[in-house]
Amino acid sequence: QKEVEQNSGPLSVPEGAIASLNCTYSDRGSQSFFWYRQYSGKSPELIMSIYSNGDKEDGRFTAQLNKASQYVSLLIRDSQPSDSATYLCAATGTASKLTFGTGTRLQVTL
Amino acid sequence: DAGVIQSPRHEVTEMGQEVTLRCKPISGHDYLFWYRQTMMRGLELLIYFNNNVPIDDSGMPEDRFSAKMPNASFSTLKIQPSEPRDSAVYFCASSHGQGWRNEQFFGPGTRLTVL
Image 1 (cartoon, each protein chain N blue to C red):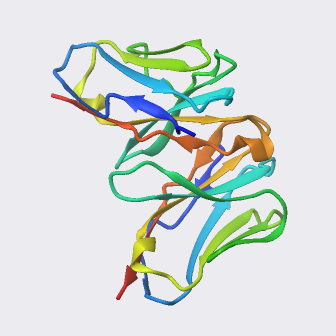
Image 2: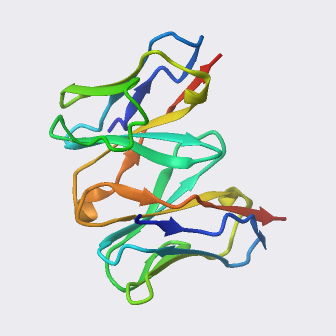
């Protein structure tokens, strides 16, 4: 079974620090990778997508992909209390469906 | 542009009743996905459509669940008869397709409670 795995957390970081969220996937055929943010009681919101090895930066967010290690990460710089949410990692292969991890809960403390 | 639209936002029903959830995808998206989310099982894909045709329904839990997409702008997920274990949040999402175009955008969800 093709899986995406994440540590459920909670990951607690102080305001202003860097939050590092990690994800591994089992399907070597996976080609596209996504990070979604989900606030409690809300729907998943796409915040980053990455398709090739290396880093991709967007504002305070950096996604990192290492296909050889089957590893995806999301870095959040200058963490804010508003970043407190569950972060879902997702991967897709040749089909169009996504496989989601169970999510990591991030808490940014004052 | 409007995002994915779902209705109703909340549904409370009694066991044995029929439930119909509705979804309008983002205009121009040719893939539509139905998900269910619970605390125990996380986010699960139930079924997805491409150009109104069901492609993969392997996630549909049992025959009580059915989904249709009569046109490019409307889809329904029906549960008949409903059971308490069907209580969950049901999300609809849409996308253009594969690769970078596979970015899926979620609707606000329908919170279903079956008593």
